[in-house]
Amino acid sequence: MPGVNRLALDATVGDCGALRHTPGGIPAVELTLLHRSKQAEAGGERDVECEMHAVAFGEVAKALSAVAPGAALRCEGFIARRYRSGASVALHVTRFETTDN
Image 1 (tube, rainbow, N blue to C red):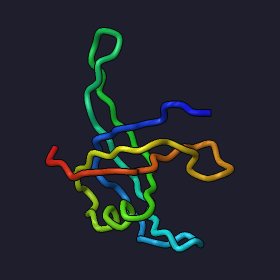
Image 2 (spheres, one colour):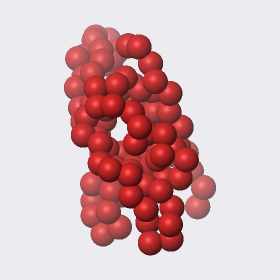
Image 3 (cartoon, rainbow, N blue to C red):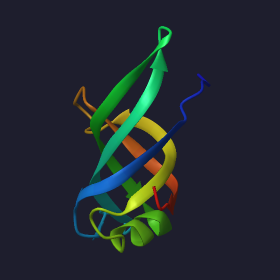
Image 4 (cartoon, rainbow, N blue to C red):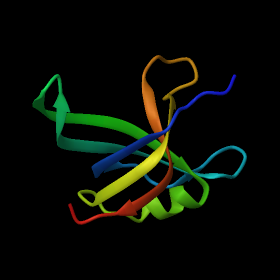
């Protein structure tokens, strides 16, 4: 069933795990993204702070594993369950670039 599932997020890198490989040999990395911004809502402005789990695979994982904690990023990807049987979600990063915030 097709549907829109795209997320773009400006964030800084929090914790970043070591680069690992899936049983199929695909590079993978897990990290935490920290977001802080002001957003328009209901005619006003809201301060937003949140933490999001993220994961990347393949070449994106290799590149993300080299980014230092505290670095500012613009991440794009889709959301999916963090664990196959869990209810929490993670951003699956498919593209990112460093920014200077």
